[in-house]
Length: 85
Length: 230
Image (cartoon, rainbow over all chains, first blue to last red; front, side, top):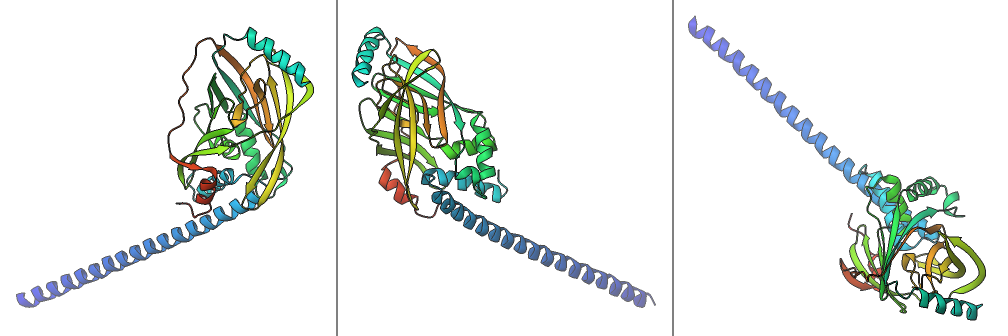
């Protein structure tokens, strides 16, 4: 009888441990996926801001702005695009 | 007109022969620009720059050999940053008297620091117009500046008010070559106007800019055609 109870308790304990492990693994996997998605979004954002920077420079040059000024104005916009200013 | 000015220059030079150096503080104004003020993408940004211009000042340091023009230190904000961006406000301009050869120190975002050697020969037309700036009688002169960028060649008018009674041929933003110090200068949308004039009998030492890689203007133009470091 004691052995039976002990076995039952052990079985339940191991089941809970296994469920907890699964749960932690799932959480880690979700966190990793979220971080990867965040990083990919950041890369896309930087690409998009970088393209805007290049376009801004061309736009300013069209209006006769000196290249060295166009660089600074476009850079300022670039910083704002990335949320860095 | 030129003979009159030469005579005036001779008499005022003699009278002010004891001036050996000086510092002129200039305020900055960004005025209306036909293209920028009406542009869908940049008009609001240009407006911020116009507000920022009111907050900054520049100083022209000079002696009987060289001059140096730079922005006065200030804690920057978005509008000030834009005002500097539209005017090359972070650059330092260095000229030698009676020389077309000039130098500017520039910190170009994404490209780094450079000392650019360039030539700027200015053909001024002196006009028969005068006005007083800070009790100094000034004469008007005009010229044209040419901007050559990746999209072509653009010409913009330049107006200077120079003062023969301060007999140094310097001015703000690398402009020089008039028979007197330039106290007000307008190029396209940018105007530098003298706010404070300090002249000295002592000869101040002015250090040449030295921070950055030395290049010619042509070399710098090639560098900025490449991708910047983001």
